[in-house]
Amino acid sequence: MSVSSPAKPCGLSVIVPAFNEEKLLGDSIRDLRRALDQNGISAEIIIVNDGSRDGTALIADELARTLPDIRVHHQGNQGIGGAFRAGAVLARGAYLILWPADMPASAADLAPYLDQLEKADVIVGRRRRRIGYNPVMAFNAWLYPKLVAWLFGLRLRDVNWIHAYRRDAFLKLNLTQRGIPMLAETLVRLRDAHASFVEVDVEMRQRAAGVPSAARFRVMVRTLRGLFRFWLLWRKEVR
Image (cartoon, rainbow, N blue to C red; front, top):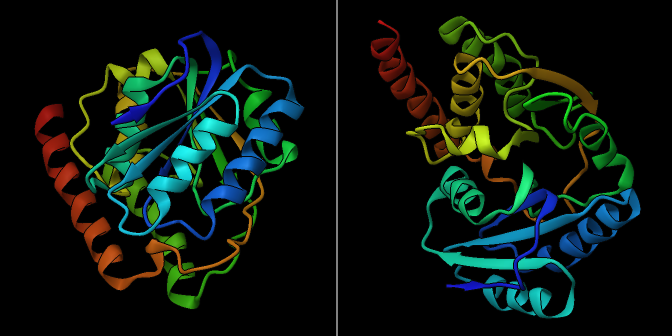
């Protein structure tokens, strides 16, 4: 079920997957709406309630009723990749960007991406620092891009953060992953489709509450399994 406003074109669709984010969603969306308005870009926000079991759904619907250019899509839990793809299908913007529901936004946070719109098909955010990472997470953050580079020949400094994609190019992709590996798969498939890339340096914000899902050991294991499953499929396709 979706809560929608009247259709109108816009330059950017910001997709916000939300799973059990009742403590943070309201403030995060209000910050994001304010930051987009301050940058003066025509933009919509699509909140994808990804099977939340807390009050996320009610909060999302209330935000859509009280703030401009906010839409909500409710679905069963499909992971960050499935949520982003669902939002992309509903999007009206020329570009898509995925924004974490647990991260505040300022005009300065969005500016590096907005400055590059229409200059490239893919805008890859590179975090200057990892905020709030424990030693295991920091090691994984160091290892993962190197693993992606070794498996796929995709040499980017940061493959798991905020990226912006030209919507038409993204919707042509046949993506196989639903969770975190979807981010790397998207970059690989867009590279293979001869999309143009630009990398921008950005700051990572500390989440206000809760624990990021990427900090959970089972999520780390599931991410590696998904990446290798995609690699096996991709290798067959390339051959």
